[in-house]
Image (tube, rainbow, N blue to C red; front, side, top):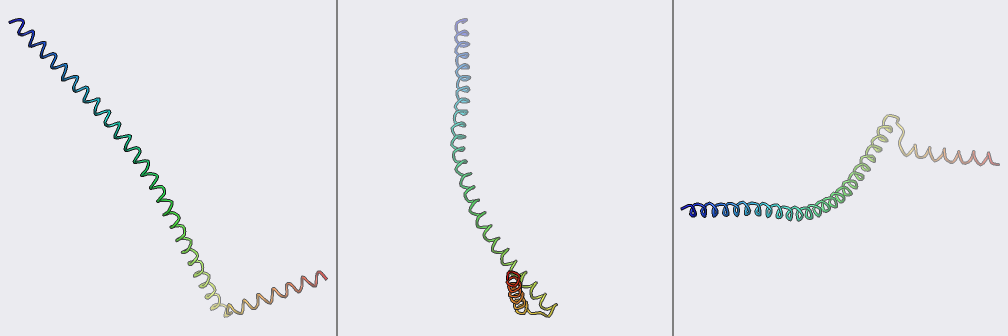
Length: 117
């Protein structure tokens, strides 16, 4: 009888050790698998990041171009409105100002020519 209980205890201990070892090995397997998946994700995430950066550069370039066009258009509109407002308030037409500017330029050149001579 003593041998029977000892044998059962020994078998139970061996079974317990095997179960504990299997649990340990399963834990190592999970750890190894998670490292593999993390490395695969790292490679994909780097590729995804680079792709997103490139798309961001393209969007930025398009946005800058659109903004420059809109700012140029807005500047032209503001200049035209200022000229129209000046013309209405002063009673002087823009064409007349252009004529006067041309005459001033000619007179300036004539005065410079007289000073040299």
